Every structure is written in C-alpha cells, then in structure tokens.
Image 1: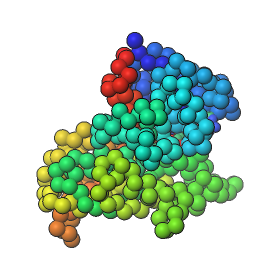
Image 2: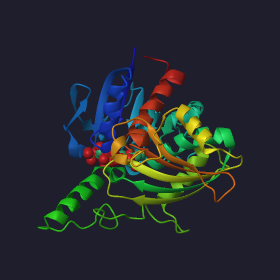
Image 3: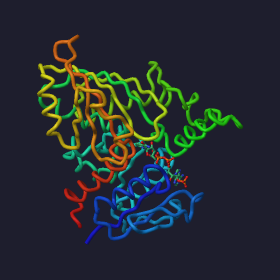
Image 4: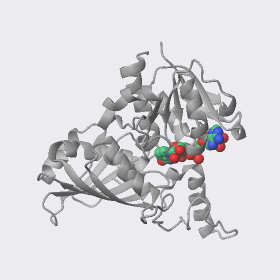
Length: 340
Ligand SMILES: NC(=O)c1ccc[n+]([C@@H]2O[C@H](COP(=O)([O-])OP(=O)(O)OC[C@H]3O[C@@H](n4cnc5c(N)ncnc54)[C@H](OP(=O)(O)O)[C@@H]3O)[C@@H](O)[C@H]2O)c1
C-alpha cells in the first residue's frame, strides 16, 4: 500500500519538478491530485508517463489524503496549509511561512532527518530556502569534524528562484536586447536582469540586509547549530536554473584542504568536482536536472587561522526545493507514516 499524495502548485516551477521527482524516485504513490489556482483549472501536467489535469485548490477536500507537497507561495499557504493539516494530511511546505515556527521542523534530510518527528505538533514540515538547502549540505560534514564558527557567503542566484514569472522576464528582456521592438521593463526584479546582476533578493530589512540574506542566517542556525554565525550577500544573476555560492568558512579547529575535500567526497548528497585546471569546477548550467550539491574550488584561506574557501552549486528547483521536499516525504514515510 502506498500514499495518497497531493501536489499543490502543480503548474509552477517547483510543483512541476516535484511531480518529476516523485516519478523518478518511484515514490510509492497510490493516488495523486494536482492542484493549482482556479486560473489554471484543467491545465495539463506530466507525472511520469501520465498526463494529469489540475483542479482547484480552493474546493479540494484533503480528508483521507496522506501527504501534501505545497509550492504555492506564503499567502496561499497561510490559507490552505492549516486546512490540509487539520484534515489529517501532512503538509510539506516550500514557502517561508512556517520555517521559523518552533513547532514546525525545518528539514534537509542529509543534515537533520532526525527532526522529522516534530511534524506531529502541527502536521506541517518546512522546506528551507533554496540557497540555504545547498549550503547546509556542504557545511554539516565539515562542522562535524572541525566546528564552524563563522560563514561568509556570497550567492549568485538564478531567476527560476523567483518562479516562472522570473524566468519569463529574463527570456523576454534578453530577446528585447537583440530585437528592440518593444521594451520589457523590470517587473519581477528591481532592475533589468538580462546582461546584469542585482544585489537584492526579497525585501530590505531595517539593518540594511535583505530578507533572503536573513533567511540564510536563521535557517542555517535552525538546521545545523544555533552557534554558527553567518553573514550573507545574495545576488540575482541572469542564469535560468542553478544557484552558485562562494563560501568562506572559519572553523574552531584547523582543517586541512585535502581533509576537507575527502570529507566532502564521502558526504551524503555531495559531489566534489575539484581539479586545479581550467574548467575543473562546476558551473550552474552543468548541475541542471541533477540531485547533487556540487563542490569545487576547495582551498585554504591563509588570511585566518582555520579557514576554508569553496564554491557550491546546485539545481535550485531540485535540491533547493522539489527534491528536498520529496526526500522529506521519503523520511516521513519511513520514520512515521510507515506505508508503502
Ligand atoms: N523556485 C525556487 O527555487 C524555490 C525554492 C525554494 C522555495 N520556493 C518556494 O516555492 C513556492 C513556489 O515557487 P515556484 O518557483 O514554483 O513559483 P511559480 O512558478 O510562480 O508557481 C506558483 C504556483 O503556485 C500556484 N498558486 C499561486 N497562488 C495560488 C493560489 N492562491 N491558489 C492555488 N494555487 C496558487 C500557481 O498556480 P497558477 O498557475 O494557477 O497560478 C503555481 O502553480 C514559493 O513559495 C517559493 O518561495 C521556490
């Protein structure tokens, strides 16, 4: 016997990827419902070799459904997640709404799968921000060996992190640069994204950082260790899929770069590609469609006592969202629901 699974936001970037990954990983699905807003009623989406038609989330009855994978943004989640949870369906949510709620576990299975049992307080589990998910996969095995004191991270985040409208904006602006028949002014992003980079993701906070940067700080603490200090600069770049991060890590104990490389080679969810030659590293375009978090450019930071620099790249729609959500569903099934 398998699970009755709901995918809410099935017409979106993350929702479509969740359907792909459920099929690829042969998650034990007995029945599946694909939901979106009324706007896209009847829109066709693929699930393995099947084509499914979306129905309206607003009129859906969650009674008798086991797991709901949500990727609909915080506003809609606020309305619908409590309804699903109350009906006995466990919600695995991609929005930021519940991530900082002490009664909701925030999970990256390679790092803190043990936190899964906290789900029963609200019947809700949160998926982290895409830039946090890939970073903690890289940090955790190094923290276990040498205790991380401080992380300085700069991100290079793709436009798919801003949903399907973000991808359309880059595409349309790029075409308009070559064929300037009509102007495509910034809408989803604050400035032109084509042939540009934008040092702002999400809204500004009082201290001058952005909400995206704040998310990386608090989520890393919740998932790995509250004692880790993180300072982040998050930047949107004209890449369709794949987030990259330059990460500087200061440890309590000395960690040699060769040992760091060996630890990361053995770490779950990590693939090390690190040759000190032209092209001997991973760029975002090469990680699209992959499950791994790729690590390259591992090297000592000689400006501090115990420092390592590295380059970290992953498919933000997969490890940063859909894959992580399905992995959480797998842990939930194995550890708690025990069907399939
Ligand atoms: N993209 C990433 O890298 C990433 C990573 C981590 C987390 N997330 C989070 O995942 C969520 C979805 O992101 P996305 O990139 O997939 O966005 P997206 O491509 O814009 O898709 C949004 C989806 O939500 C549905 N939706 C929106 N409002 C709704 C409502 N009121 N009722 C029912 N359905 C509604 C849309 O349905 P319609 O087509 O009918 O409008 C669509 O299926 C967001 O919370 C985002 O922050 C995204």
